Length: 445
Ligand SMILES: *[C@@H]1O[C@H](CO)[C@@H](O)[C@H](O)[C@H]1NC(C)=O
Ligand SMILES: *[C@@H]1O[C@H](CO)[C@@H](O)[C@H](O)[C@H]1NC(C)=O
Ligand SMILES: *[C@@H]1O[C@H](CO)[C@@H](O)[C@H](O)[C@H]1NC(C)=O
Image 1 (tube, protein in one colour):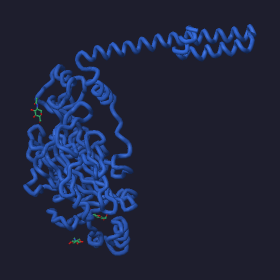
Image 2 (cartoon, rainbow, N blue to C red; image 1 turned 180 degrees about the horizontal axis):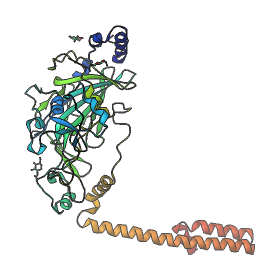
Image 3 (cartoon, rainbow, N blue to C red; image 1 turned 90 degrees about the horizontal axis):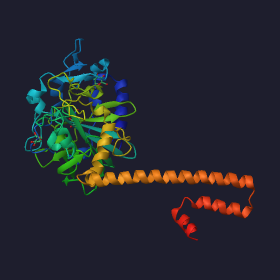
Image 4 (cartoon, rainbow, N blue to C red; image 1 turned 135 degrees about the vertical axis):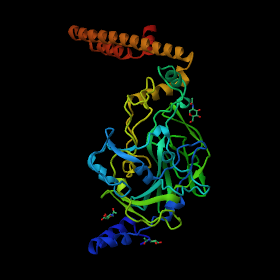
């Protein structure tokens, strides 16, 4: 079986299930996640000042209540857990697991659990590993990391000159962070070919970043990549230090507590054609803390809704807005791993996310800022732009006049029946009018 794919074994298991009876399924389907998925799993470096640690997924479900449009769901529901979360799907995709406590009081569950000196979260299972087989001996291993809270940037993290613009806005509170949300799913994906890693993807704010396994820019330790989790936002980067994203905002990455996510993780196999998740036994090298699977623990994966509160209305005293840019202090929580492009051709998702016009405008502005829009440069730049506009207008005007002149000359040539030779030189004159140098030479002659 070792050489056969997990998918093949699962299919065989299912046929047996149908043939025998359902209770033996769990035993029949006791398939083990390949060892290499743990051997090369990322090691995370959390920021030394990170307050929002990896969080237990089940606790998060228990400390939140499903709401729709800020209202509790009226139907009676059983206590929710990893085995039944998808029952919320009948209320649609806008359901939001909403914090029972006020998040601005920072209850302990929101802060998660700091990994111990071995990098293990003893009382929390904040990691979900999902393997997707792709044929040609290729396997994509997704390592999902869960945090109950995401803290966005504050004014200190905004680059010049946007920080000045925002700071000058009305009612702007410098002490606040914006773009916060309850629930945060980040991930790495490692692509394996014949059990050897060939590439790695890091999730970041928009589309993330991908690297060949041998790329010098990724940090590694003992065959495992080190993934830096940015302070507050938990965006993933291959190196420490300040990281600028979306041209405008700084993420801080540094050597802090090490988190070894696969030590406390759930392991699954995902079958794209049937959209089925099946639990796997943790790789044999791992003495994983969760006890043997008491149940399938897959229902949470099928949940369609959001993992945190819906964006608070402006009337909510906890809500605030960044002047001019409209970014909210509290945004809607993210949706789960099923939406994170588990089927991809390359290391990145197949189609990049569409930019909002404001993101596009900020990107263009910030890209031009250092060279051309900063201080006195802006006047030189505007002067050049003006010169270019005036130059183009004059060029067009001359061009149009020549073109009209040419048309007139042609009409004249046709009516007057000038000799063929003369007509030819008239044509040359028309062509040469597109080229200033030739024009000048002709005149000089
Ligand atoms: C599943 O298989 C592994 C080894 O392949 C074994 O260690 C484990 O005890 C089995 N678990 C169950 C629940 O049968
Ligand atoms: C912004 O946040 C960073 C990191 O959390 C912190 O070090 C800094 O002091 C904050 N700045 C302000 C103005 O509050
Ligand atoms: C586990 O999965 C099997 C097969 O899909 C299903 O019949 C069973 O009800 C599931 N058990 C739980 C506890 O969800």
